[in-house]
Image 1 (tube, rainbow, N blue to C red):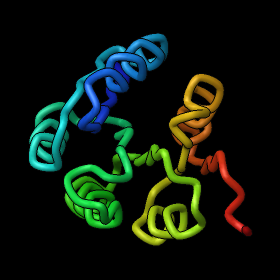
Image 2: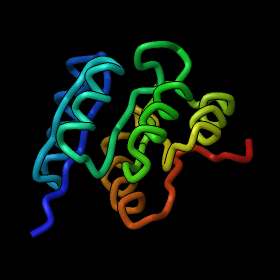
Image 3: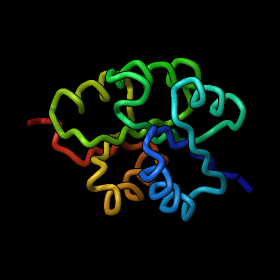
Image 4: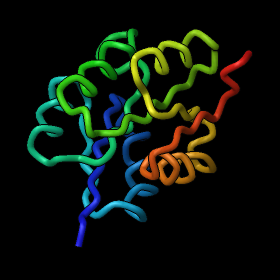
Length: 131
């Protein structure tokens, strides 16, 4: 049996708990972290399938966190979540190598479909990339 594992990286404890509840329906193991160092440490220990990453984790430059995960763990899929729907935020995530982008305000409806598509090797964006 292939156990599926996810890491949620966000500094907002309330949001982490809500997202964790949703992801427990899909994953065998859900780990929450609050900074980039903890994320990289958890990824190296648990062989995660997916990282759900807050756009503003650690710095306001999401690209650095996404690039760090993708460089160190090329097999891990990365889904970026954000309060911000500006085109620049989406483009930063895409340019850094994110596999998807979900707005936090849409997480209840978009998170699980995004996870399914990303784990199937596709991409998912809850905002239009062409704006």
